[in-house]
Image 1: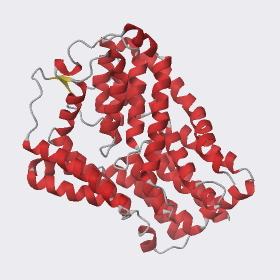
Image 2: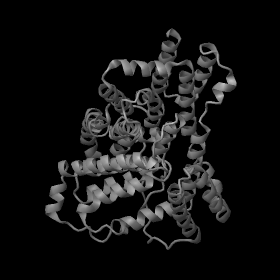
Image 3: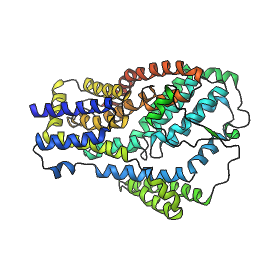
Length: 449
């Protein structure tokens, strides 16, 4: 038992130290997994390395490569402009930006959805909308889209569950995340000036995209976001006064492949074939690369290797913990506690609290496996607990201490930043408490045995 406790302590310590020191958590975890596996668990190195989640790696590489091509050839920009050009009523702005952010976040990397923030925050200012409403619309859209089967949070959540032989439908997590974030959007609409917009019934003169605002910053790093939030480098929004051109041949091919990807996944699911989205993305990405070699080569740099290493390192360490029996030990502790609902609540609370300050992806990769013993005990429905945990870890991302919240503050007008910082802190911290209580009550409690 002592060895298991030491291994769990090292796991938690590595997570804390890597976060505080701002070093790559995945690489640190992988090295620590090898050391703990060899020295404490007496495992052969080949067995430790064999625990690296190759299936999740294929998912992440395939998805980020395919949608990287869509960003490189301008298809994503074209979609953004086409949507914004059709918004005519001010009251619809937060819902339009929610949908737009969700759509972009669903395309592989959730952070790509943050390219909407430099458009949305100035638009809110221009039309007299409370910047908090626009910020929360974008933040909620980010969280909803991130759990699509084709995006990072969704891939990590159901991929990690499948790695542990738990049958979790990726559409279930997506549906729970989408519903929860729509409810949060409605709450934000009612609290931060939505009724006022309804009374004004103001029309958006011309169209939002008429000024030609287009985003060239297609990815925003944590460092850039925090620098901007603290008054450093701002995130640029470049103007292009020219009207949007018609779709090019490559963009038409990209949209066709997107439709083909969705159709292939749905058809395979209906046929009961358990489709591998990563393989499908690589196949369609190869087609697009043959059509447009330049975008295909450029998209290679968009493959999210950092996240592959992050998730891989954590899951490899969790595999060592499972081999040592540390996970089973936690499972027995959960069974003996006698209050599975309280255990579920604590797990979700920890996920939400840590995620408000650290990597949501890392939290999902770490806590989903550690929640499995409670599921294995038979007292809790697996899909319910994992869905609740995943969404709890995501809805707090509007905290200004995370990338999403910092970006929202950075792209707000200078005179609004202090208020945004304060209100986003309150909102994010309130979600740490409200999220676990509501989601566990709705999803987990009805299935408690």
